[in-house]
Amino acid sequence: MSAQHRNPMAAVEELGWRIERDGIDALSPDELAAVADLAHEQHLSATLAQVLVDATAPRAARERAFGRLALQLTRHRGVHLILAA
Image 1 (spheres, rainbow, N blue to C red):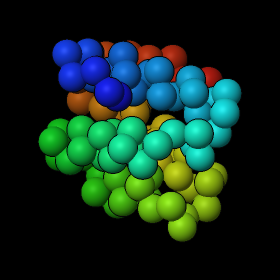
Image 2 (cartoon, rainbow, N blue to C red):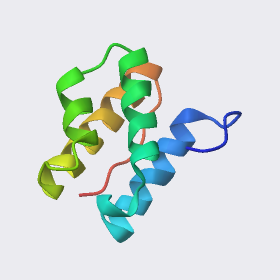
Image 3 (cartoon, rainbow, N blue to C red):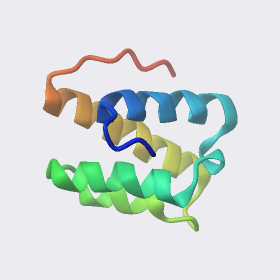
Image 4 (tube, rainbow, N blue to C red):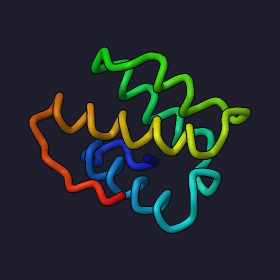
C-alpha cells in the first residue's frame, strides 16, 4: 500500500489478489503493517492484526487473518467485495 493518495480498500483488494497468487510471504512487512494499521484505525480486531504481522505465525493463520480483516474493513466502510476461497 505504497501510494498514500490511493483508495485504501483498492490497495487491500490488490494485496488480497497478490496473496491469492503468491502467498502471504510475497508481501512485505510494511504492506502487512499498513493493513494492520488500517484495522487499528477502524477499531477492528487487534488479535487478527497481530497475527497478520507476526512472521512466526503459520502462513495459513496469517492468510486467514488477512481475509477476516479485509472482510471487516469492507463491512465497516460499506463496501462489498467478493472474496473467493
